[in-house]
Image (tube, rainbow, N blue to C red; front, side, top):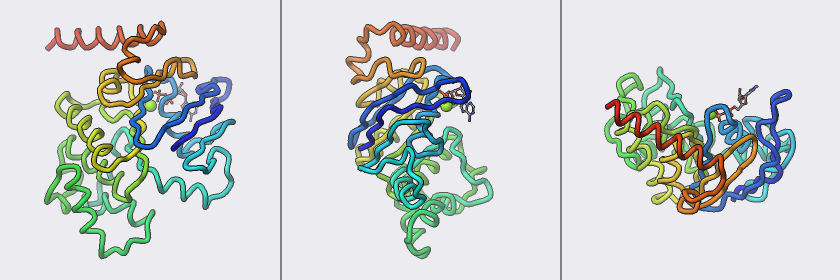
Length: 252
Ligand code: ADP
Ligand code: MG
């Protein structure tokens, strides 16, 4: 469980997150939606202290990491997280095996001799086989996403953070990533936090959706309720999302 209490984060004069409080429950798939530049990445980075909140608490399984000075506590809590970066960020010079094993090497005490077996199993979970010796440059965009995801889950995290998992992907790959995120939750029971500007994605896969606007969550609810929100900003964002999809289709 991740309990966020009174989270504040500013960059200079700009208050990006204002007194945010929300609890992400075990097994949830919690999405944060909002336009570009609103503070979604800032939010997700605060959860693992890649950014240090100005004030507030981030209590992960009972440990507050928002202001802890203990590197030991931070390292321990971070170990329970997988992080899927927007770009995938695979190491080009390493093979798929080495990429997926990366976290095992640095985050666990698992002996190196076990890596191939574990990597094979994680790759199978994301639907890949016999790719261990390939380099990222030999993979399609969709395969790279799968490998990135295999790397994020290699050390068996309790939580996964996805930052814009479908941005820049074609519709087929987007559908595939969507299934993967849903699968990870169903197969591994991983608690997931997704930040995205893709309203459809959020409504399709989440247990709850939070809309970030002007530093606050203006609506936090289950997709069915979210769709019916009376909040003006939610309605506007849904309208825009819908319109842009219609326009895209017309241009096809
Ligand atoms: P989103 O992920 O929703 O697109 P971000 O969380 O990346 O938005 O950014 C929110 C706002 O904070 C933006 O205006 C961005 O320019 C600003 N910002 C983000 N990171 C930094 C930083 N390290 N220093 C200064 N400003 C930042
Ligand atoms: Mg972002």
